[in-house]
Image (cartoon, rainbow, N blue to C red; front, side, top):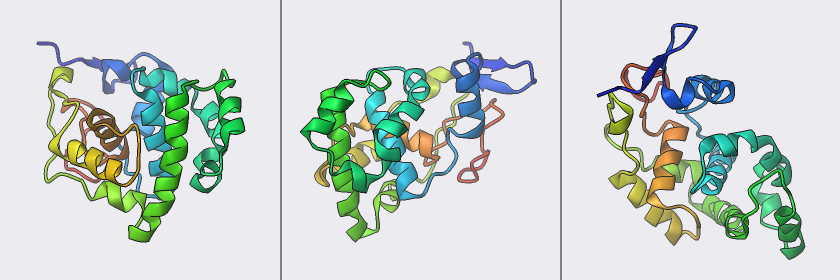
Length: 198
């Protein structure tokens, strides 16, 4: 079985998805899986993961600056005030993913994020679902797409009024935030988050 690991021209080992596209490589090397513990950072990633649903992450990453511009730098207090005219404007913005349900979910999630501040906030809420252990995949096929914790987080967020927060999307969020470490055991990034040992 192939591990899916590729050794780059810099002699660093990465999974195939992060090995060739320079943008994906930079994202993998510097950002993916590093701990994000502030409300703004978690809300932005939760929003982008929702837009990614059914699409490739590379598509979202290429449009991230457009998303930031369109969604007021992912400021929940601004987004919660978006009205139907703003939704129509966003649906006409070719720089983002023009999906009404996902746009409306982002507005809904902004309101839910603000409401969560009374209970410690979004970041604390999401990090409370950190598991006792993290996967230890040797090959890309061994990386899970959901977990009991991502299922529980999905249910808990839905109860709090969030949308587009299914278990698979929440597992991807947990990976991106560093709550779990699914870097392959042979990757140069394994264990670099400081959350989990190598």
